[in-house]
Image (tube, rainbow, N blue to C red; front, side, top):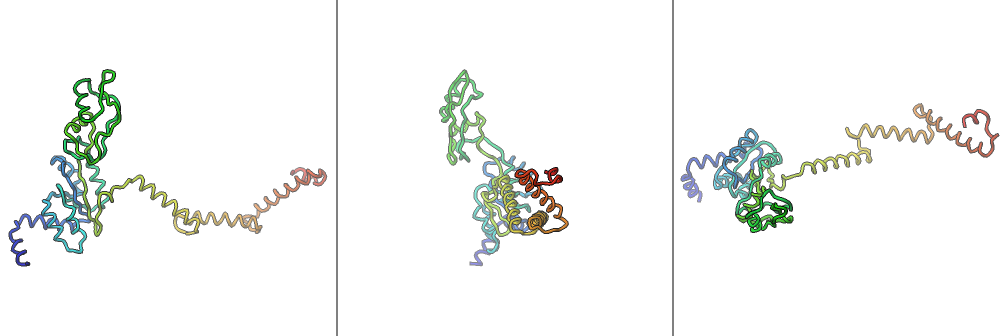
Length: 303
Protein backbone atom coordinates (compact mmCIF):
# COMPACT_ATOMS: atom_id res chain seq x y z
CA UNK A 1 0.00 0.00 0.00
CA UNK A 2 2.81 2.38 0.91
CA UNK A 3 4.52 1.66 -2.40
CA UNK A 4 1.28 2.45 -4.26
CA UNK A 5 0.98 5.79 -2.46
CA UNK A 6 4.58 6.70 -3.29
CA UNK A 7 4.06 5.70 -6.89
CA UNK A 8 0.88 7.80 -7.05
CA UNK A 9 2.59 10.85 -5.49
CA UNK A 10 5.26 10.70 -8.17
CA UNK A 11 2.59 11.64 -10.70
CA UNK A 12 1.50 14.81 -8.81
CA UNK A 13 2.79 17.83 -10.75
CA UNK A 14 5.48 19.76 -8.96
CA UNK A 15 3.44 22.96 -8.90
CA UNK A 16 0.66 21.17 -7.00
CA UNK A 17 3.15 19.86 -4.45
CA UNK A 18 4.42 23.40 -3.99
CA UNK A 19 0.88 24.73 -3.50
CA UNK A 20 0.13 22.07 -0.88
CA UNK A 21 3.41 22.71 0.94
CA UNK A 22 2.73 26.45 0.80
CA UNK A 23 -0.58 25.97 2.63
CA UNK A 24 1.05 23.82 5.31
CA UNK A 25 3.87 26.34 5.77
CA UNK A 26 1.44 29.25 6.08
CA UNK A 27 -0.67 27.40 8.67
CA UNK A 28 2.46 26.90 10.76
CA UNK A 29 3.76 30.45 10.17
CA UNK A 30 0.60 32.30 11.27
CA UNK A 31 -1.42 32.37 14.48
CA UNK A 32 -4.74 32.27 12.62
CA UNK A 33 -5.89 30.53 9.43
CA UNK A 34 -9.35 31.06 7.96
CA UNK A 35 -11.53 29.78 5.15
CA UNK A 36 -13.41 32.51 3.28
CA UNK A 37 -16.18 31.95 0.75
CA UNK A 38 -16.03 34.45 -2.13
CA UNK A 39 -18.80 32.91 -4.20
CA UNK A 40 -20.58 35.62 -6.21
CA UNK A 41 -17.93 38.26 -5.52
CA UNK A 42 -16.50 39.75 -8.75
CA UNK A 43 -12.78 39.28 -9.30
CA UNK A 44 -12.25 43.05 -9.32
CA UNK A 45 -13.95 43.39 -5.92
CA UNK A 46 -11.81 40.59 -4.48
CA UNK A 47 -8.68 42.38 -5.69
CA UNK A 48 -9.78 45.62 -4.00
CA UNK A 49 -10.51 43.76 -0.77
CA UNK A 50 -7.11 42.10 -0.95
CA UNK A 51 -5.48 45.54 -1.23
CA UNK A 52 -7.50 46.88 1.73
CA UNK A 53 -6.38 44.00 3.94
CA UNK A 54 -2.76 43.95 2.77
CA UNK A 55 -0.29 44.13 5.65
CA UNK A 56 -2.79 42.59 8.08
CA UNK A 57 -4.31 39.64 6.26
CA UNK A 58 -2.77 37.49 3.52
CA UNK A 59 -5.29 36.06 1.04
CA UNK A 60 -4.49 33.06 -1.13
CA UNK A 61 -6.85 31.45 -3.64
CA UNK A 62 -6.10 27.75 -3.98
CA UNK A 63 -8.04 24.86 -5.48
CA UNK A 64 -10.29 23.15 -2.95
CA UNK A 65 -8.77 19.75 -3.66
CA UNK A 66 -5.27 21.01 -2.90
CA UNK A 67 -6.46 22.79 0.27
CA UNK A 68 -8.14 19.58 1.44
CA UNK A 69 -4.98 17.55 0.78
CA UNK A 70 -2.90 20.12 2.65
CA UNK A 71 -5.09 20.11 5.78
CA UNK A 72 -5.44 16.33 5.68
CA UNK A 73 -1.65 16.04 5.59
CA UNK A 74 -1.25 17.81 8.93
CA UNK A 75 -0.48 15.63 11.99
CA UNK A 76 -3.56 14.01 13.55
CA UNK A 77 -2.99 15.84 16.83
CA UNK A 78 -3.07 19.23 15.07
CA UNK A 79 -6.52 20.82 15.35
CA UNK A 80 -6.11 22.63 12.02
CA UNK A 81 -6.47 19.24 10.35
CA UNK A 82 -10.24 19.48 11.01
CA UNK A 83 -10.49 22.57 8.76
CA UNK A 84 -10.63 20.26 5.73
CA UNK A 85 -14.29 19.45 6.39
CA UNK A 86 -15.29 23.14 5.99
CA UNK A 87 -13.79 23.46 2.49
CA UNK A 88 -16.75 23.94 0.19
CA UNK A 89 -17.68 26.54 -2.41
CA UNK A 90 -15.32 29.10 -3.85
CA UNK A 91 -12.75 29.24 -1.06
CA UNK A 92 -9.93 31.67 -0.37
CA UNK A 93 -7.47 30.90 2.42
CA UNK A 94 -6.57 33.78 4.73
CA UNK A 95 -3.61 33.94 7.10
CA UNK A 96 -3.07 36.52 9.83
CA UNK A 97 -1.60 37.12 13.28
CA UNK A 98 -4.56 39.14 14.58
CA UNK A 99 -7.15 37.35 16.72
CA UNK A 100 -10.22 35.70 15.09
CA UNK A 101 -12.62 38.36 16.39
CA UNK A 102 -10.66 41.18 14.75
CA UNK A 103 -10.36 39.12 11.57
CA UNK A 104 -14.14 38.58 11.46
CA UNK A 105 -14.74 42.31 11.98
CA UNK A 106 -12.31 43.21 9.18
CA UNK A 107 -13.95 40.78 6.77
CA UNK A 108 -17.45 41.99 7.66
CA UNK A 109 -16.32 45.55 6.88
CA UNK A 110 -15.64 44.49 3.29
CA UNK A 111 -19.31 43.75 2.68
CA UNK A 112 -21.52 46.07 0.64
CA UNK A 113 -25.20 45.93 -0.30
CA UNK A 114 -26.03 44.58 -3.74
CA UNK A 115 -29.16 43.99 -5.83
CA UNK A 116 -30.64 40.51 -6.00
CA UNK A 117 -30.59 38.45 -9.18
CA UNK A 118 -33.01 35.77 -10.25
CA UNK A 119 -32.10 32.53 -8.52
CA UNK A 120 -30.34 34.18 -5.55
CA UNK A 121 -31.30 32.93 -2.10
CA UNK A 122 -32.77 35.60 0.19
CA UNK A 123 -30.39 36.08 3.17
CA UNK A 124 -33.19 37.71 5.22
CA UNK A 125 -36.90 38.45 4.98
CA UNK A 126 -37.32 41.27 2.43
CA UNK A 127 -40.16 43.77 2.77
CA UNK A 128 -41.62 46.69 0.85
CA UNK A 129 -42.93 49.71 2.75
CA UNK A 130 -46.22 51.47 2.17
CA UNK A 131 -45.83 54.86 0.49
CA UNK A 132 -45.20 56.78 -2.70
CA UNK A 133 -42.53 55.76 -5.21
CA UNK A 134 -40.58 57.82 -7.74
CA UNK A 135 -42.30 56.12 -10.68
CA UNK A 136 -44.80 57.80 -12.99
CA UNK A 137 -48.05 55.94 -13.75
CA UNK A 138 -47.63 53.35 -16.49
CA UNK A 139 -46.78 49.70 -17.09
CA UNK A 140 -44.59 49.71 -13.97
CA UNK A 141 -47.74 49.21 -11.88
CA UNK A 142 -48.47 45.90 -13.58
CA UNK A 143 -44.82 44.84 -13.34
CA UNK A 144 -44.80 45.48 -9.60
CA UNK A 145 -48.04 43.57 -9.12
CA UNK A 146 -46.72 40.61 -11.11
CA UNK A 147 -43.74 40.51 -8.77
CA UNK A 148 -46.11 40.28 -5.78
CA UNK A 149 -45.68 43.91 -4.73
CA UNK A 150 -49.00 45.62 -3.84
CA UNK A 151 -48.79 48.65 -6.15
CA UNK A 152 -51.40 51.12 -7.38
CA UNK A 153 -51.93 54.72 -8.46
CA UNK A 154 -52.97 57.43 -6.02
CA UNK A 155 -52.90 61.17 -6.67
CA UNK A 156 -51.14 60.68 -9.99
CA UNK A 157 -48.30 58.69 -8.41
CA UNK A 158 -47.36 55.04 -8.23
CA UNK A 159 -47.59 53.94 -4.61
CA UNK A 160 -46.98 50.83 -2.56
CA UNK A 161 -50.37 50.25 -0.95
CA UNK A 162 -49.30 48.18 2.06
CA UNK A 163 -46.29 47.00 4.00
CA UNK A 164 -45.55 43.47 2.84
CA UNK A 165 -42.88 40.79 3.15
CA UNK A 166 -42.32 39.86 -0.50
CA UNK A 167 -39.84 37.05 0.08
CA UNK A 168 -38.82 35.03 3.12
CA UNK A 169 -35.30 34.13 4.20
CA UNK A 170 -34.09 31.05 2.32
CA UNK A 171 -36.43 31.45 -0.65
CA UNK A 172 -35.23 32.05 -4.22
CA UNK A 173 -35.73 35.39 -5.92
CA UNK A 174 -37.71 35.22 -9.14
CA UNK A 175 -36.18 37.26 -11.97
CA UNK A 176 -39.20 39.58 -11.91
CA UNK A 177 -39.07 40.25 -8.16
CA UNK A 178 -35.29 40.78 -8.30
CA UNK A 179 -35.74 43.33 -11.11
CA UNK A 180 -38.54 45.22 -9.33
CA UNK A 181 -36.67 45.38 -6.03
CA UNK A 182 -33.65 46.81 -7.83
CA UNK A 183 -35.86 49.45 -9.48
CA UNK A 184 -37.22 50.29 -6.00
CA UNK A 185 -33.56 50.58 -4.85
CA UNK A 186 -33.97 47.73 -2.39
CA UNK A 187 -30.69 45.82 -2.27
CA UNK A 188 -31.08 42.71 -0.08
CA UNK A 189 -27.87 40.93 -1.00
CA UNK A 190 -24.37 41.46 0.34
CA UNK A 191 -21.12 41.20 -1.56
CA UNK A 192 -18.08 40.55 0.56
CA UNK A 193 -15.80 38.02 2.18
CA UNK A 194 -17.81 35.44 4.14
CA UNK A 195 -15.77 33.70 6.80
CA UNK A 196 -16.71 30.00 7.01
CA UNK A 197 -14.32 28.82 9.73
CA UNK A 198 -11.14 29.98 11.42
CA UNK A 199 -8.54 28.15 13.49
CA UNK A 200 -6.45 29.66 16.29
CA UNK A 201 -4.25 27.22 18.17
CA UNK A 202 -6.51 24.39 19.29
CA UNK A 203 -9.81 26.23 18.78
CA UNK A 204 -11.96 26.35 15.65
CA UNK A 205 -14.40 29.26 15.49
CA UNK A 206 -17.56 29.55 13.43
CA UNK A 207 -18.95 32.93 12.30
CA UNK A 208 -21.68 32.64 14.95
CA UNK A 209 -18.95 32.45 17.62
CA UNK A 210 -17.30 35.62 16.36
CA UNK A 211 -20.35 37.76 15.60
CA UNK A 212 -20.76 39.77 18.81
CA UNK A 213 -22.50 43.05 19.59
CA UNK A 214 -19.71 45.19 21.04
CA UNK A 215 -22.17 47.57 22.75
CA UNK A 216 -23.88 44.68 24.54
CA UNK A 217 -20.51 43.16 25.45
CA UNK A 218 -19.25 46.45 26.91
CA UNK A 219 -22.45 46.69 28.93
CA UNK A 220 -21.92 43.17 30.27
CA UNK A 221 -18.35 44.00 31.29
CA UNK A 222 -19.51 47.21 32.98
CA UNK A 223 -22.21 45.32 34.89
CA UNK A 224 -19.77 42.60 35.92
CA UNK A 225 -17.23 45.19 37.09
CA UNK A 226 -19.89 47.01 39.12
CA UNK A 227 -21.13 43.79 40.72
CA UNK A 228 -17.57 42.67 41.52
CA UNK A 229 -16.86 46.05 43.12
CA UNK A 230 -20.02 45.91 45.25
CA UNK A 231 -19.24 42.33 46.32
CA UNK A 232 -15.69 43.31 47.30
CA UNK A 233 -16.98 46.25 49.32
CA UNK A 234 -19.59 44.16 51.14
CA UNK A 235 -17.16 41.29 51.82
CA UNK A 236 -14.33 43.64 52.80
CA UNK A 237 -12.01 42.33 50.09
CA UNK A 238 -9.15 44.79 49.71
CA UNK A 239 -7.71 45.39 46.25
CA UNK A 240 -6.47 48.42 44.34
CA UNK A 241 -10.05 49.45 43.48
CA UNK A 242 -11.55 49.05 46.96
CA UNK A 243 -8.75 49.77 49.43
CA UNK A 244 -9.34 53.55 49.61
CA UNK A 245 -13.17 53.42 49.95
CA UNK A 246 -12.83 50.52 52.46
CA UNK A 247 -10.49 52.62 54.65
CA UNK A 248 -12.79 55.64 54.31
CA UNK A 249 -15.79 53.55 55.34
CA UNK A 250 -13.86 52.05 58.27
CA UNK A 251 -12.92 55.54 59.47
CA UNK A 252 -16.54 56.72 59.30
CA UNK A 253 -17.82 53.60 61.09
CA UNK A 254 -15.17 53.86 63.82
CA UNK A 255 -16.06 57.52 64.38
CA UNK A 256 -19.75 56.65 64.57
CA UNK A 257 -18.96 53.92 67.14
CA UNK A 258 -16.77 56.26 69.20
CA UNK A 259 -19.48 58.95 69.21
CA UNK A 260 -22.26 56.56 70.26
CA UNK A 261 -20.17 54.67 72.85
CA UNK A 262 -19.04 57.45 73.75
CA UNK A 263 -15.25 57.06 73.57
CA UNK A 264 -13.40 60.28 74.24
CA UNK A 265 -10.77 60.47 71.52
CA UNK A 266 -9.35 63.65 70.03
CA UNK A 267 -10.96 63.03 66.64
CA UNK A 268 -14.48 62.78 68.07
CA UNK A 269 -14.44 64.74 71.36
CA UNK A 270 -15.79 67.92 69.75
CA UNK A 271 -18.61 65.95 68.10
CA UNK A 272 -19.47 64.21 71.39
CA UNK A 273 -19.57 67.54 73.23
CA UNK A 274 -21.71 69.14 70.49
CA UNK A 275 -24.08 66.17 70.63
CA UNK A 276 -24.27 66.39 74.42
CA UNK A 277 -25.03 70.10 74.26
CA UNK A 278 -27.75 69.56 71.66
CA UNK A 279 -29.35 66.87 73.84
CA UNK A 280 -29.09 69.13 76.91
CA UNK A 281 -30.79 72.01 75.10
CA UNK A 282 -33.54 69.66 73.95
CA UNK A 283 -34.18 68.65 77.56
CA UNK A 284 -34.04 72.31 78.59
CA UNK A 285 -36.76 73.22 76.09
CA UNK A 286 -39.03 70.53 77.50
CA UNK A 287 -38.33 71.73 81.06
CA UNK A 288 -39.02 75.37 80.16
CA UNK A 289 -42.30 74.40 78.55
CA UNK A 290 -43.40 72.85 81.81
CA UNK A 291 -41.95 75.52 84.10
CA UNK A 292 -40.59 78.82 82.83
CA UNK A 293 -38.56 79.29 86.04
CA UNK A 294 -36.82 75.90 85.77
CA UNK A 295 -33.89 77.36 83.78
CA UNK A 296 -31.28 79.87 84.82
CA UNK A 297 -30.65 82.94 82.70
CA UNK A 298 -27.78 81.40 80.71
CA UNK A 299 -29.88 78.42 79.65
CA UNK A 300 -32.85 80.63 78.93
CA UNK A 301 -30.71 82.69 76.52
CA UNK A 302 -29.40 79.57 74.79
CA UNK A 303 -32.87 78.08 74.42
